[in-house]
Image (cartoon, rainbow, N blue to C red):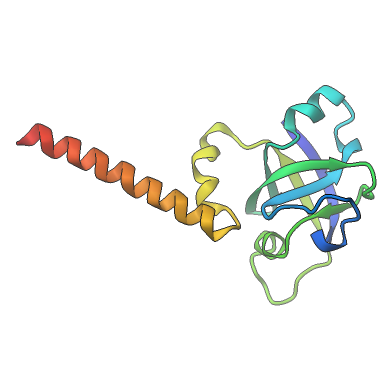
Length: 141
């Protein structure tokens, strides 16, 4: 489902004027990007794919009524990842925000901004691989 599309400027999470601090790996857009309340409730606190050109990042999405329509609250690593980590970062970029496709969900933990999540994903993948290897060896012996 397409959530939002257009030109956005970044607002740092520290400048986001709501009472609750924004956790790492979250993004906030204005609530009128999705006018239908049921669609908005369907995607709130769920993963969203944020796309700029050929670069895609995944963040948990939240909505706010206090944010201008052309701003997105996004962490700095996500902002530079969207722009391919070039030296000259643009202040305003064209973004497309949508729900992830079903085949993108398994790779989200490996691309998370928090290193703890990424390490947990790799340890889980290694343990699954070793479990499959041990089952395979058990049937061979």
